[in-house]
Image 1 (cartoon, one colour):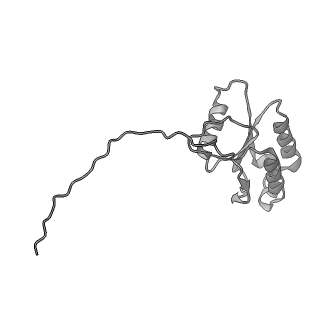
Image 2: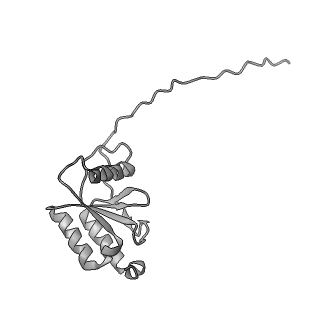
Image 3: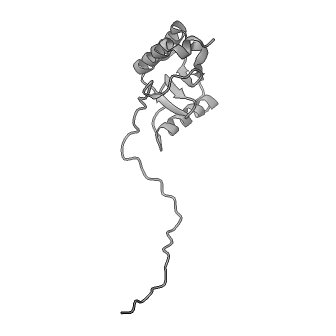
Length: 141
């Protein structure tokens, strides 16, 4: 029995880049420190807005609980084209591919991964309480 050997052919697909539309709304970032994000001093950054009651709650909790020396914060200015808005947009885009939603504050960002951990105020307040009681944060000056 003889076998016929066919020449190898290669299929070349066109190099077009198609951006697929989002099939649903971007999921809300609802990560938690201690569950997926480790409690490490100087790792987290807060984005806040002046005059925002929820941002004020987070600011007050940060000052009262004590980890303020190990968590940095940025207060967004009035110009949405400012660098701080760009940084926050990049954090949301790192969190959800093709993120096209609104930027929400307060937002807790993991500076190691560049992703938004959470923009849910009760979760952020709980995470700040958790960090304040964590041994690594008690020794930070």
